[in-house]
Amino acid sequence: MSKTKKAELNAEDALRMFRQMLRIRTFENNANQLYLSAKMPGLTHMYSGEEAVAVGICDALLPTDKITSTHRGHGHCVAKGAEFKAMFCELLGREEGYCRGKGGSMHIADQSNGNLGANAIVGGSLGIATGAALTAKLKKTSDVAVCFFGDGATAQGLMYEVMNMAALWNLPVIYACENNGYSEYTKTEEIAAGSITARAEAFGIEAHQVDGQDVIAVNALAKSLVERARNGEGPFFVELMTYRYHGHHVGDINREYYRAKTEEEDWKKNRDPIIRLRSWLVENGHATEEALDEINAAVTEDAENAVAYALNAPYPAASEVDMHVFTDVEHVLA
Image (cartoon, rainbow, N blue to C red; front, side, top):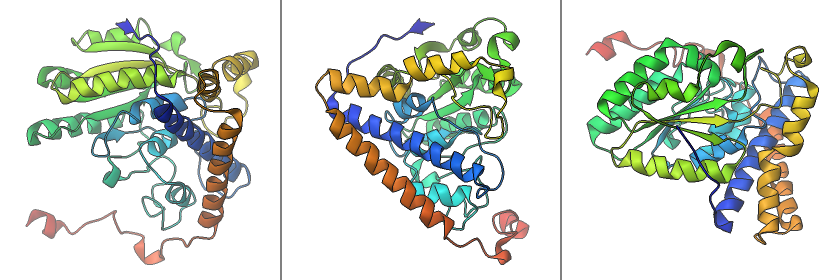
């Protein structure tokens, strides 16, 4: 296992990633308010605090590269290019959503942009990403697949089955484990023995650990591994040390029973990925505080307009109840 060192980044790339992280944080803040105001059906799982992971990795990918996501997947979707209007429409069950309002928060997909979908099953996207990597190899494309999953998914047998296959066939896949310190309501260290990266190394897979709150370090590592995966050197495994600011889901309001309030405050004050990049931009003369405030204001306005649009968008017609659920078997077998 190797730990990456912080790399430099030019101002244009840094500003783009700053904006993308702001878009994720702003989206999550609005999604949380929609839930609290009883305007959004079902539960959702906030990504706030982990923005540097999704942005740092997705910024290293091409539109044709594939990702698979998790139940905590808004950040991955936005980082891969999802637009606010279609995202909010999906959360609110409207027909203009990415899945015509039928997937909701945990099942957003946009294959036109390489997003093969979020998955409510813990570790469920591991097989899909590995299959996408196998497809790329068989078709001799240069596509790379990235699988985002949480530390809790390392307890799923599927992970070991697909890593074995990926290692045997040198597939162009990167397994991105977002270790936010908790598997639902339990500290990871209390249920996961040994090192997470050692699980990948047991299959001969090169594994790295990186500060998931440092978008510059994440992006530098991602660029290197993506390029190597394109050149047939995959698979790779990355453990990204990060933190979620909210509970396991939006209804988890009593998280003080399993983690200290001072712990949350420390991460927000001293390790916030957006604050860290903002400070780096200003200290290195790449942007002024006023310019960054303007970016924030523009993102906030975009989100507010998208929410207003989604709240007034139509629902799918009742006649669509079985559309995309069933298919013509005779047509498939023909």
